[in-house]
Image 1 (cartoon, rainbow, N blue to C red):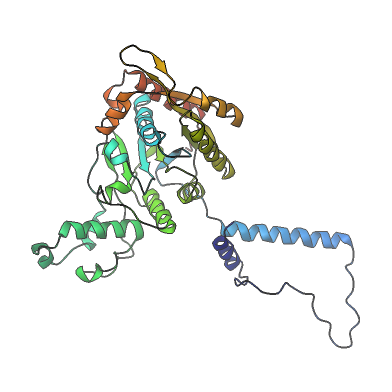
Image 2 (image 1 turned 120 degrees about the vertical axis):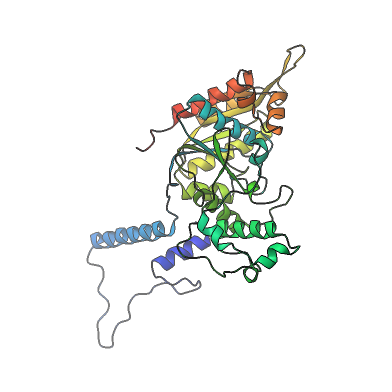
Length: 379
């Protein structure tokens, strides 16, 4: 547990927060009193120790974040990888589409949790800012002179929308340019996800310019992820697929500790460098009590489009060996095929544009394996 969490726990228990204090000492004797009596017996000492342990558990439990389901979402599936460049986002997009294709009665959402490098907007062929609820739009009324001036009204509205949606307040420096200085307490500052191919999508890429970098510290990133989860009008979803950023950092811990996750899927290529990080990712989810549904071996084999010769560019069956070591299942293999890359770059993922291809069938099979391993959703 980090120092900040400890301070929260101590404050919750109304204990002193500052360090460097003296350890508790026995009560002083009053003048004229005899020496302090020894403990009655070891049984009373044991009961006091047990009571102290119970109190510590209660204090620490109050300091930990409470998992709260996302309104309207039945099951959350996270797709993660230990390192970048293994095709995780491409896999997440096609898996979300495959979940919907396998069962047309299911509603699927896709959240891009990679704040620094969002790629879902391009792969899903989506642009523009998410709409806000009407109450917030009424708040964001600007003077007529501003609209007529050469100042960018759209940039102002976008900046204010981002501040309101993500942080519940107007960006610093913009309050004086608006008719109002604060948000009403009853304002429903929800964002509506953008939709394509029947999938509700939300990404940081919808809130910033395509070429603008996100230069934020960890606390701001964690706050943004929390808002992208809860300040979005997801509607009624059977599955919410979360494309996690690479690594085992703030975002992974924030998501794992704040919402109930039905299962995690680890994506990796077969080479040793990727496998080292994939193992760390699987172990992280186990430590935070998130069930790992299995591993996906991406870019497993390259087949020459002319002579059909197969080459294991990144090695053969490395992910399968890792799965055996960890006692996990292999959900499927995805080939290294130019069509997968081209279709995602054009905003028409292979599951949608080429549903009869071998690559699309691989994604559809993996989606079926994921559903088979998910727990029964709540009624």
